[in-house]
Length: 341
Image (cartoon, rainbow, N blue to C red; front, top):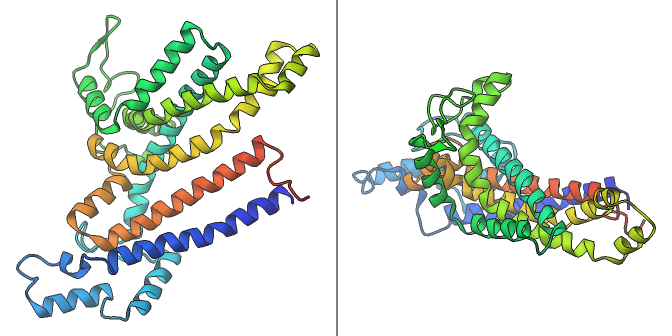
């Protein structure tokens, strides 16, 4: 089986996953114990039969369940996501997602990058220098980072940056450091993201939130990276390569490093799944108006149709991350996709 055929099969397998996820979402919202129509009405309108019937008609709940389900699924597949009912009342959901999603993607991107650039090298370094003080220090740091709750770390970091602490005698004013931004919290300006200055300003704006969001992943990747490095170092083919006279540098980069990355791929991607849920808390604390914040606001205000639509977006992002994991597997491990060929 070629790699292209393998990836094509993986893409086909995402179809039932998306269908099942959206079906469960529809059943939980429209067939669950909470009546979406009553959530759209104010307390005084709930006892008004005419207002209730109008809300039912607006949501399509006057249809038979199967008919409503098919219409709802067709709208999702064609990205005809309708409008909001309570939050940003009357606004087009497609426009809202195009406005809010880039902020979440920017936050998630830097969260993953920070976790990988710090967690993986430290884990590999600890594995290469096992049972030394640097190994103990890195391992302890990984445990601490992994143990700190995101919401607590977010509040603490926001409080520390707000008071402009002194670091090694230098006054750390995050708002004016290197690139000036208007405030520590709040949404980044995405209108200038394609310019160098706009990208740097937006990055600095989400960087504290990205550190918080990637902290748990960072600790996990340090721990798993250390274990993977130790396991690969003890493989027989490493001893054989060393006996053949392969230099330490070549041994690390050509043999140990690449093979130690293989067990890290599912760890990195699975942590990316958690970033979707974690972004709801972190975006709320830092005031970043992304889809996580939008989902939270829709949930607490009872805009159930918008909650269902955002769940569909989260499912698509999760499936996309899973496909990226499969692609990385085929690049790092040439054996993937070649079975039966």
